[in-house]
Length: 475
Image (cartoon, rainbow, N blue to C red; front, side, top):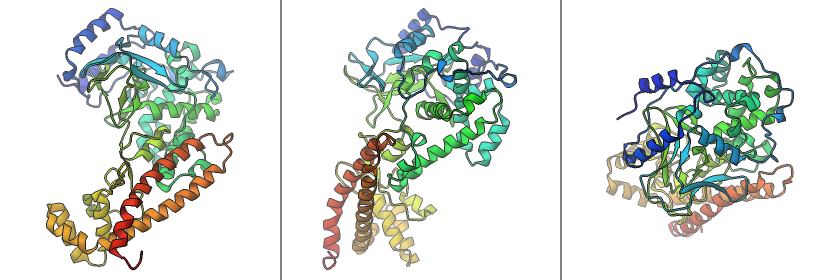
């Protein structure tokens, strides 16, 4: 059966807050036994408007005399995973015995298998009454009109779903141990390396695309933080504590899933790491409960992996989540000086298609097509003929153009790669001169730049001979 929005609405409009209603352990186990045999029936819901009863937050601002007597968000604070797992089990979260949370360094906690798990098995079940959603937060908090208007004026409308969970998390933080979410909040990471956590000195050490994407994350945080000032039920101590508000923003930004343009944070399921090679996926039943299920056989000792985003654009994952995706198969070619139009979009001018393949150094056909199209800017008739050949699958005509202009295209490509590598060396040198005590994210930035460099070096090894053979007098 497909998920209907009204059924989800009816369920959540009648339920109580997590502190009042626990999921019975036995009923969840019984449900899991059924789900294990019906994994293929999972589906992703429509834009499900989950909600919880609205509390009177508008008329009361709680005084916080000692912020760190609540959840200590300092980078030195330990994550209390054990208490969170007890809390999750009490609220009906279930995971099969073959899956457990583990860590290699005490900071990054992730889900892994301890026994073989066949494809199609539910490995985690998270009831809807303990996860946070943008629509549920808005229903509880009420429409924050002044904050919404401000974010829209700052051209940040796409951040509104994120903003509502951001406020909800700060409200739960403000409630301290009285919050039903306290054990979960106290289990979250304290250190983040996303673009929102970086400084201008970090951006100065990144290539243009990565720097721009990282700065976009910082702008989102600044906009949300500014809008927070208009929320009456969040204390001034919290509003003025930028370390705290940045932490809350990073929690939402790095741990939320997208559901039809909205955002949802699912405790326990948010412990699953990213990889290009995924082995689990997430879906929701008609009541909005979240299930994580295996998409292929997973051997014992394997981390569970899902996809956070485009595996061919590691710079985007780096900027949003703060890690280098070593599993990525490719990287955007970094050609950013071409003005996009509809015909170039048809030819594949997109971050996910204009790529260099990491292991082989191969250049995606879309890169060559876009470069050739731009080479023909002075000859509209030929440009149009080449464009139509690409669109209509006329490989013969397309091949004739590529053969005729191979020298020009590869000369342009070689110049781009050589220039980019020179600029990257300068950026890496600049990063190496930074003090790690004041710029602790430099090692991650260096790892990102090294990843890109190695990809470009493989591309260079492939295209240099072609460029030399095309224009032997010049090389």
